[in-house]
Image (cartoon, rainbow, N blue to C red; front, side, top):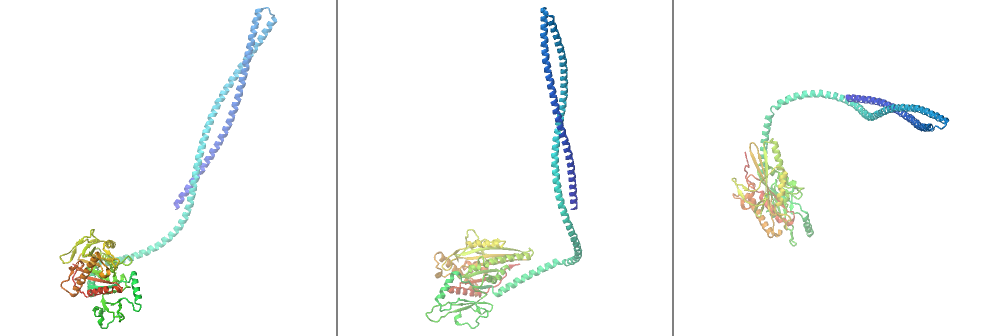
Length: 640
């Protein structure tokens, strides 16, 4: 800053000196210019005077010469006349002598006068010649003065040009001086600020010096700590390997314990969900209340808590109830036969009590269902075959439970997110030594025909059997690297699924949707593969209520037949039969590897809350009770 200030001062001083020198030079040039102008004016005046005097003298000489010439001519004429008269007189001889003398006298006088005029004429000519010479000299002097005048004019023009240039230089110098003054003021201000900053910097330097001293002290301590840590880190790799080995062992124990818990809870688990009453069904309930105002209109479904259970011996009215309702580990569901008009006789309403792994009332949401389903999805991550299917009559909420909507995602969407979260956790915890591959397939069973919703033509597929006696289908298996890719596949398949309107349901699924996710974990020591089937089954229908005809009738028969075959398979598994009729339908044949052995199965039985559908709901509940009594034999499903 000080150097810039000194440079600015030096530049301002030089600019002022240059300006003073130019001012002095300009003043001198202006004085010389004024003197030259005065001399030029004087010279012009003298020249004009000389020209006037010379003109007058020349005019006078010319006038005198003209007078002399005229007088000479006159005298010559007189002399000629006198000579003629004298000749005449000499010739006549008779004239008087006096006249002759007089003529001679007059001739002599004329001659004398002529001689005198000649003398004067010569003097005048001499004077004219002298005047001409003087005029020539004066003319030469005039020409010299004129040349000097032109030279002076050129000098004046050069001086004026130099003066203009000097004026411009002075203006430029003055502008530079003004700018230098401004810069000087700014530099002074900057210098003052720099002084303040320098003061602050000195204070900061002092503080930094103190901090440096403290840091040096801390650095010394840290170096000591570093030496201690270096000694401790010498065994870090061994400790890390040991911790990773323990983590692997703990993960293996966790999988085994989780599998035992699932086996103790039952490899086939059954949930029952009663959906809420939708807006379009409210008028049915209101109309029934108006018709039976003297009766207590209540829902056929009751969900007693643990403290509300009736542990007394069962009456004959409820002899058909499942004995699982007495299991304190089960959730109890009570069904009461709707009111019937008996023509004035006392009402006889039967009751049934069932116990299931999970019971969800109308006030339970998708999150509650997912909380009970999540452990089975974890089993698929651990390397087991898992099957989740929704069962029930048409319009009972199966598709909503499995798929949901934008505000309430179903089991399929939540399972996909959990699988990809598990993939990320496994790959991070293994330090990239393990890789996880996820692939999906989407099949539809329509009228006992198996179709691939991901293929272009959706041609009918055949189920084959591999060397392990597991079902194999030649369909598209699409690898997925993110949740969004799987969701796009789901949306694509949903648009291609067969859905029609019936008297029982405006959007009735006319096919079984089987969404399968393959979860494969590859580690340096073993490979583990799990498979998750999520099935949205078509709903069972009564022809008297659905009003199906033509194509709808054919679809209804195919749906009811496949559901009946599923019920037969469940019944065979419950009875422990050596032969289980998996091949009786495409649905059971496709799910064979997930309905037996050490696979995990979850049946979500959905029910319609309206009394009008009580019989269909009771049939669904009985199917659920039958499935809850099945016990599957275990077998390993991963290879080391």
